[in-house]
Length: 386
Image (cartoon, rainbow, N blue to C red):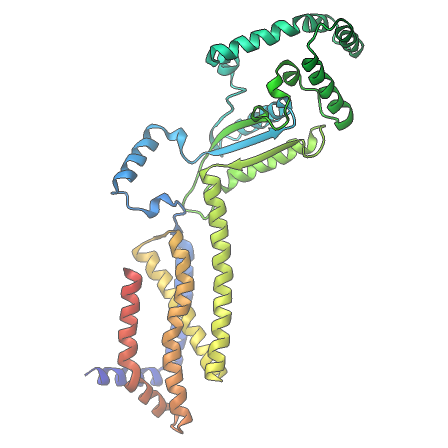
């Protein structure tokens, strides 16, 4: 029975070959247009897992109650001195807060009015005592400098401190070290470094400044937070370019889940495009040496592209949305899809080499491997659907 069906299908294909070819071209083109206009990609790695899982339910509950804890960008500002990093952070957060179309909120804890006014209340007793001791130790120095903030008075105070030994040697060393850095490296003197020995080390964690920004995301695009990330980098570059401090004395870096996911997506997409092109090229070379016929090579590639277009249209209509794993599908499809074309074309080539005419060669090919190809196709479909 199946042989009669194959023979009927073959006769229709031969009789209306031009019409079928044009119909395939139109159908493939329509499928590509339909898919490009309607198919979306969910780039959220979290949504790749079922929402019915217990930990997913807990996570969604956490996000709904604390929306500020997810999909944030952490901006890390590092400076040679605490003053530099704080100054840059203040400017950056001010500019970002104006971009309400891109960010839900921007939080800069160190420059937040609440913490500026009440920050000391969050210090431990030991930390408050250390701060009080430092202020008391430098009180004469600060009092004299506040009355006359000129450079001449500053050096007079230092000279007096050296002669009278009114300031401990380690504190003087820190002062002179900061002065040398200002004079020879053109880095503004850090008063925080002068007042607190913990700030003196350029590698100190206190030289880091953190800003939390929550971007407005669109997971139906390949880069959900691309506009927000690009805006942060543009503003950062403008600030670093215009500020009068040495190059590399301040760095601004981005991290956080949404940033890492975008880099992963960019890497996966770039890799998929390269792998797809390389796979198609290698498949073309393989089948050319196998067929030794440009007509069969073109037919196989056309079959592959048409099948891929129809598959995308099917996914668009019945699913509507793809995830990150779907990127690998194109590469798999090239390898698995061309297999059927290779089987058919090599059998057809064998028949023609044996001296049979085109119609007879096609008939024998369909008769001998038609059923096997149908079974292989069903098995491949089951594998993809599972």
